[in-house]
Image (cartoon, rainbow, N blue to C red):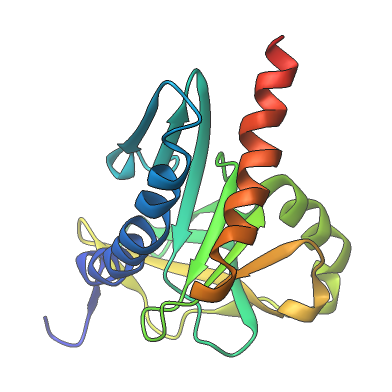
Length: 195
């Protein structure tokens, strides 16, 4: 590897958080509501890069994005710019980061160490972030990540959780609270809007 960070390393790290989320949260949640709804199905979307998982309840879909970047330090990392170096002359294409482009309903920041999960409604997180982003400096990855022989750099902001409202922290002792939040906000709300 010659000291390079390869993209597949990030995929491996990400898949740890995705597995924690799937096994410790999403599957138990689906089991807990199974007797209330006719159809419940979990769809793995990780190959389409728009969202990681979709929970389908009757005809409603809840899309989840999972980030394995939580370090149990009461801060979340939000990518603001993704930069790809496309040739040896170091010309580049800037792309806006995931904080602006997410298409999921819920984003979950997972600690691969403690399995703690931080849940945000995506639209709510984006609105709150826009109000406070000016207070935090854009940081750049120390080393590029290589994918298809191209070097990618990311820019991100590290923001304390206390800057945000309306997020939920998942631990085994409050599982029911998050289950109720998702059911009332994303399932029952959608069913009422369809009637």
